[in-house]
Length: 406
Image (cartoon, helix red, strand yellow):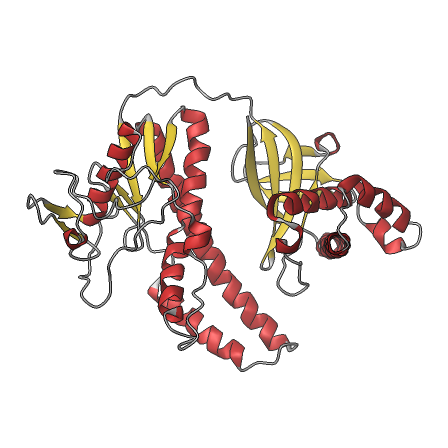
């Protein structure tokens, strides 16, 4: 099956400048193609990839700077644009800003890419027009290269190889156990067997420094050299945070998909859940700040990243990932199945008003998710998969809970 391998690249000064140039050309092709597609849509017509690719070939005769980048890289940019427009809609696809967008481009022809290992910690890859580039050999390649993507994150460059590793998904898992998983804002992952997994992705010192850098950034001119240094320092902190979150998601999903044959999750529409509040006509800013805080908490825990990592590991272990309706899973008692908003005393404490069952609220929700996965309906008997999940209570009355970190 296809999998990814990402390595940190050590470009020479000339290679780094050339990679920046290729990224800028790809960004220009993306924006020009997107504007062309939007103009066609305004007229009530449509333009596809093949027409734009033919026009791009003709534009190279007029604009020599387009010849600097490899042809198949620019064609791949138009293919990515075509797929994005078909999937999300032409007017929903974003522009690629010169200041906000980090350079990224893909070499789709795997036959033109050669990879060699130089030693214990170093390897090199031959990329079209870039030549041989050195990268840190942090893990084995493990298969045939199908494509390569070069991207920049802050001041560092990375190369990601799409590899055919030769593995196939097992027909079934070696085990027979099932488990329910609840994703929360206080504890990242709560399992129906009582396990709580969480991690701090940004240290207290980094949070203080990030806040000071933001204040410093607000007082600097947009085109100044000091502003670029401040942005670079901010990106370093954000990159560390993303790396820790990705490591946590991979670590947790690996243990769940390896130990259990079935993993049940809530069917959450994370994109809609993290949308900004709009307020009311009388109070335009009402609940906007509160909703922004909830959005940050959800995004910080990496709900979607964990789900994606779980599906990725399940391909190799044969585990089945089941998504169940999320309605009332946090308000239902896992013992007597009664539903009452008063059952949830706080963010961490659950106490049933009917039978007196008490325990951790997230673990109780995970048990309900497992019950719903086994009975093909939600724990409260609601068959509507499109019903919105109720938000869990919080606020000043919520008691602080210290989760167990494994």
